[in-house]
Amino acid sequence: MNRRKDAMRFAAYILAVMLGSAGFSSAEGPDQAMLLKPGADSWPLYHGDYTGQRHTTLTQITPQNVSNLSLAWAFQTGSQAGLKASPLLVNGVLYFTVPDNVWAIDARSGHLLWHYTYPPNKGLHIGQRGVGAYKGSIYFLSPDGHLLSLDAKTGAVRWNVEVADVAKGYWTTMSPFVVGNHVIIGVSGDFDNLHGYLKSFDPETGKEQWHWDSTPPELTGGMTWMTGTYDPELNLIYWGTGNPTPVLTGATRPGDNANTCSIVALNPDTGKLTWAFQVSPHDTHDWDAAETPMLVDGTFKGQERKMLMQASRNGYFVVLDRTNGKNLLTVPYSPVNWSLGLDKDGRPIPNPAKEPTPDGRLIAPDENGAANYRSPSFDPKTGLFVVSAREAYSIYFSKPADGTYGWAGADYSVWTKGVIKAIDYKTGKIRWTHDIGESATAGVLTTDSGVTFTGDFHGNALALNTTDGKTLWHANTGAIIATSPTSYELDGKQYVLIGSGGVMFAWTLPGDSVSK
Image (tube, rainbow, N blue to C red; front, side, top):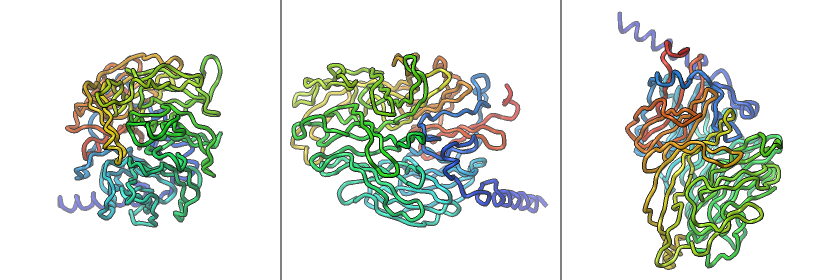
């Protein structure tokens, strides 16, 4: 009799999935309307929406009840590669990745729906940030430079196109970015012979639509590592570019090395450059400007502005007018000792005495930077830009013999500390800090109710008070957290999702704690 009841329960669960509990038959989404205005029951883009703010309007979890969070489910990927992906949520289904793998799981229960495995390849398996989604497809970049369209219902391959040549040293790790009728991808790599670029592809056919090179033929580098942001009113995409090469020497590349270590604005329909702002002119420290180019509309010095904000790897926080790329604010948010100040355009001026030398130079920050790929968040109620940052010093050496690889030198860290920092975007002042151990690990998510979710170096998922940074809740996950938190609401229940090691964790409130 018990077996019969169990079988009936299982059959009921399967029927619920088929009828829309997992959303497969109810909608094809996400369409452009969902991407432009995601609902509380979706997270259809890498950052949640096009702004890159990684902020949720959900308020069920509050500073008063967050201490009651309990584990809803945990999904074991079984992969030795740690999760770095930001999951997408579409129609009740979560999609996330590690290199060579894509999973689709039920967002309510954590049950596996399908798993796609890419064939063995020679790509660099450094990490994978996630997938893109549009209508019935999931878009995935393989380590060896291929863009795949997978059927969102089954994981079956619809098409597969090469977007970068792995034999030249390219690899691909980012979450593809869907804007209108475009799937936009960037590339990674550090060899001297490589040029950074963006490419756009037709979401239905995989046909290339446009190609934009971040560097001219005489310059190399400028990789486009991470997913960008988009302003539909201006019809501009915003992207961060990487360092010029050779990496730790500028002797063979005089000048500013335009469009490297920069924030760029492009037309998504044509790939044409509209403006560029260089955060690190003539970089010799490997400080990519690939960090999130966050879009915020608000008041700055008494004037309403369409702004772009970035906590850059070089230790500077910048605020730009995103209509034209003009600088509004540049200020250090972490120890910085490599600059002589700012030029007339608000760009840091490199100090020649702080370039790598044979006998070494003490530099702050180190090569990993004051920030990195981990996503920051913006809380519109407090005006705080909250970022997982690093305070770090390193000794940089020049080693010309190593230049053939692109690393004409080395850096050796001497001191680091991970700190969550809340930056007042209007002034650049640090309003509060929260120590998280030896280094930064997780990204950040803020909520309308005043809770900030992140993680520390010891493997703890954290909930902080957005007002003052004090700890409200923590749960140890048993591994380093290298993802950025997300949140969604299904069936009236808010979930917080954080990946740690090879496990995806989902927390929610017990029924009797929701109103407390």
